Length: 480
Ligand code: ADP
Image (cartoon, rainbow, N blue to C red; front, top):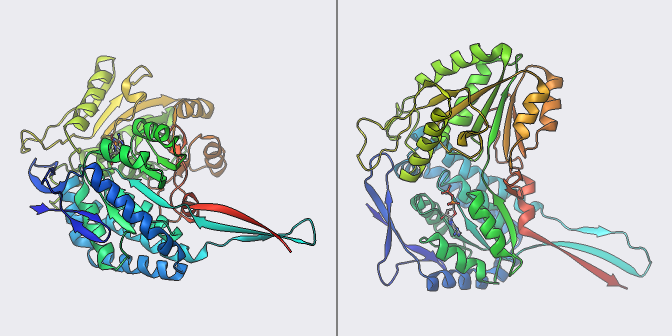
């Protein structure tokens, strides 16, 4: 069992009173490690350290910051296997997925090490001979990053890498369910020699740490991935000190399968966009809309594919889907299924699935579940399920499909399957979503801007767009 510490001002520190949070393996209920339950003082110390580090870090030539990030990336590659194991142990996803996630996490460090040196200002032509207009892009200041448990590695580097590249020190608060992966990644930042105070890690109560960071005027930006509910609260809390905010929140992704879709591709896309991570993704499909002509063939193939999913402990290499993260998650998914069943949904496979061999208090396994005849009244068609439950509904026309797909307060990801180029482009343009997978079940990637419309958030992460939220624009008007 690993007993981890806080990382403040370049040092690993223990809480004086030994107050800790236990980290559980969701496949077995076993305690796999502990992290300190930080108090207000430690959070303040982390902000002190980051504030102190700001000027020097921001003033470093971008090339030097890039070299630190590159070194960190090299170490991530070297330690990929051990981080992936830690990730599966505390989060549950199959080892193959964990390896993929750690590789993706590394790519954020790599990409932003390259992007760091491309932040340039502008010289704008003035209106008079005796003026010059110079525009600088400068780091926004100390950044607080709050990350979720569903991608414990890639969400950490997706936030820290662009912040550091831009010249901003960071205080990271990882989710309490999965802090060990974050600790492992920060250990490598330390090994890469990143200067004191530039990266800090605090673990513990989200409410206390969040509140302390949000109240501190020295923290100039908050970048958060998590639920819409918490995102809205952070947005309110940010008002008093006018912090810059980036919010990547919940989704309610529609998946449109048109008559002219490639069936095989459409079914493979579901596995990527719904079964991966046991459906615990903000980009996970929540609503399937299938056109009349292809409905029966699609459903039959899908059912066959779902029956091949091996649910179990992610450390077992033959397993293709792990458990849900905790009891609360399990209850929510079960509640969505029971509610839909009560209101008349049909059940084609799955339905519950507490694993026979699972720990009585844990092992939150949920079988892939196919529901038919779903209606708008069902919770599953209104709220994010965050589990491997697939509600299916038929449609007749393209207009109808678009109306159904856009009828949501969320706007993160949407998926479209069609072999028609013009339909694909037409529908993609009309979807009110920040990310569209057109014949693609896995659109997220380091070089593309990722983020949501509507209540799915504010701002973009990834690509050169992902640097912008960490930069302020300063205009200097010069009289000659
Ligand atoms: P989920 O419901 O998917 O677990 P949350 O929004 O609750 O998503 O959690 C995402 C992240 O937000 C986690 O790191 C969690 O610790 C953090 N968090 C939860 N509540 C708060 C809060 N009141 N203030 C700040 N951060 C919070």
